[in-house]
Image: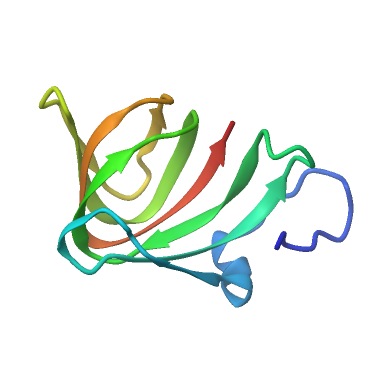
Length: 121
């Protein structure tokens, strides 16, 4: 379900404006430790499914991560650590932007619930 915008023009809105639209997206299926749970809202999606933008929230836990589409994200809240399968460590704190290319593999440890806006293609 997409959020309802009042017009077709670009918008600047606080991310929390969409909290009422958040949907339960369930538990992370590749958990290693803990019980990370996700929720979010799709803000825009191409009719053919080739790209999507939205808000994603994830609670603490540790899980395996494999990126299936290019993803650009801006983390607004929380703290997590992504570790690439090569051992490279990416620390995420509020106001971090990140690009994960399709095929990126590693782990994610959410230390403090994270909220991000994202776009995948």
